[in-house]
Amino acid sequence: MFFKKQTAGADWLVAGLGNPGKKYEGTRHNVGFDAIDHLAKEWGVSVTKAKFEGLYGQAALNESKVLLLKPQTFMNLSGHSVQAAAEFFKIPPEHVIILCDDVTQKPGKIRIRPSGSAGGHNGLKDIIACLGTDGFARVRLGVGEKPSPDYDLANWVLGKLGGEDRKAFESRLNDVEAAVRLILAGKLSEAQNRFN
Image (cartoon, rainbow, N blue to C red):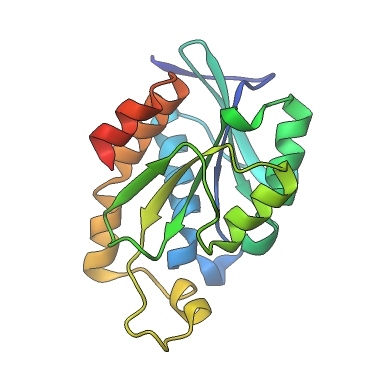
C-alpha cells in the first residue's frame, strides 16, 4: 500500500481548520476538518489522538512522515495548536500546509498559495501570528460568498454548507488530496496549475 501508519516523528504538518463540537459539524467554517477527514480515510489513518490542543494522526507518504491535525481551540486560536505541533516535531513553516474555508470562492473551487496574508480569515491570522511568518502553504476551499453585503459574516461561515454547495465541495475532495500529495512532494506550482 502507498500509505502506511506511522508512529514516530513528522516532516510535514497538514492542519485542517474548524470549530470543535457537534453543533459546528457540516458548517462552512469546518470544511478544513472535512478535508482532513478525507485525507485520513484515503491514507488509512485515524485523527483521534489528543495532543497539541487538537486531534491528530500520523501517516507516511513515500519518504515523508505527515502529521494530520484538527485544532480543537476554536477557529480564532488555531495558531496555538499548529504552533505546538510544529514546535514539538521541529517542523519549519515551509513544511506546514493549512486547509481552510474561503468565502471569496464558489463551492467546489480550490485556491492553493505558497504564502500570503490571512485575507480576513481569523484562523490564518492566528497561525501567522503564532508562527511569526506567513510563509506556509494554504489550500483554501470555496464555500461561497455571503448572500448580501450586509449579511453577518459570522452567521454565514457558521451556517451549514448543504445541498448543491455541499456536493460541489465534496466533488473536489479527491483533488484536495492529490494537491496535498503534490505539495508534500515539493511540487506546489504543479498543484496550483492543476487545481486552482
